[in-house]
Length: 193
Image (cartoon, rainbow, N blue to C red; front, side, top):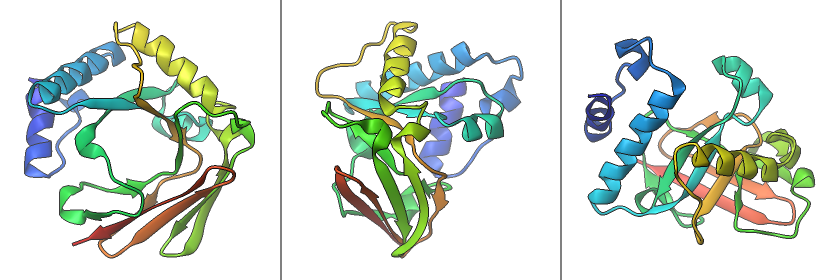
């Protein structure tokens, strides 16, 4: 029922009531089970899981949303963009941009990685790796432990996004965003009609 509710929102490209509005007694474990069922359906339809996403790693975001720990989601091959690609705004619903460190194991002190997020070449936010649970590597450890609760494992070659280092910024068609990470490089995306 909930999975169909969410799939319908995705298919028509419009927001729907949160599933907690349909069932206020929904527990976080139920929400993860709904997510896992939805991901299973997407995999059966031909998509491939390419990684995991950790969210709500900063205390400010947890406080704002009234939660006490991070959350996680899955990354699918249909979600991927190459650095510098454009993305049609018509495929998005309430889009925002966050800058995160993606893990494919490095020998860098991730707590010290500085980040600058630009919107249409104007600096909007800065952050540092320590903003994600004190160290982005701790986010990955949290994810591995949390996934084990649902009998899900991190797999070789998957990407793990460790959580945003600053607040998300809203975007609209014609916008371009880029994030510069000290020692790691730069990524960019633009949005078309």
